[in-house]
Amino acid sequence: RGPLQDACDALNAGRKAVEQFPGFEPGYCEIANALMGLGRGEEAYAMLKNLLQARPFSSTLALHLAIAAKHTGRREEAIHLAARLRETLPSGNIEVERALSEIER
Picture (cartoon, helix red, strand yellow):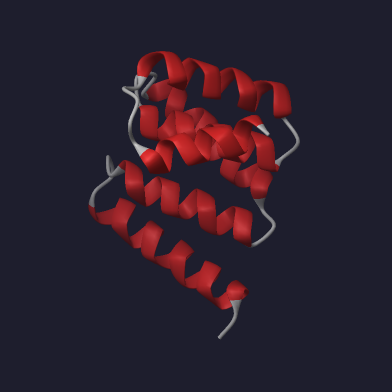
């Protein structure tokens, strides 16, 4: 087992989750992370962009879109999304702070 197999497994798990629960945002984030791990970042970005347009107040989707934007070379968009998230999210969540800092680097 290696990283590619893990990404394939995560992709399948995410797809199953959203098939059963179509509004389950963590499932879509799992799919996006798996796609990026498989070198399919553009697919992840497009999926998250569409989802965020349908759910514009989702901080979870916005955070993962920022990650996908950075992953696909859209640095300015990633930084803009990170700044918007910093304005709207309460501080203190170490994981979110770490992710935002990584996006802004």
